[in-house]
Length: 112
Length: 114
Image 1: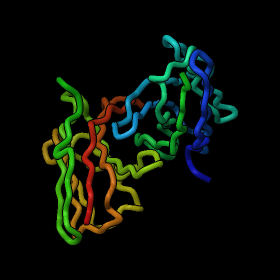
Image 2: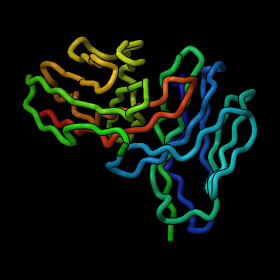
Image 3: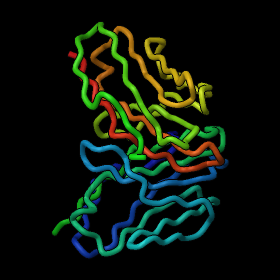
């Protein structure tokens, strides 16, 4: 079992729709959770972090965390073509210590 | 401060040669990470430093790879006797050394071994 699992996609949504990206993690001791966006040929860029159960909103982005289910998600409202990228889920903590462990990423396409 | 800086941005080398990459983290960040990323995969952890101490090295990393952070500031990653399978994007990231804080990435060094 991979430590951080994501559906590789691609996930295709029409412009203006809500994109929902999901991630599960295996280490129950994980404490911090991050979403990074990565455009093709570029390095990952942090877009959201969440530490506590529940929802956290930042503009068009909402991160959701459920530690009991070991599940974290990212919702992108009013999706734009510029949101087309790979979204990486990452976790820190537990047996991994202070290193950030990444999933393989989900490719998102927003169709104009 | 302009963020994490990596040099060179691109490196083409012949198989069997040694290469060295440099990373300059955000100045107040104590933790520095090296990752490797291949097409279609997420960043794969290689090693990380807390100040000048190398706290963890991936067991997947062969002994051809070595990293240093001699004064707790910039870091170097050296690959000896490069192989074609080493071709990848090498990413450096840094974070504050307190708790579980987010990491910020440099632009990466793309290595091509021919």
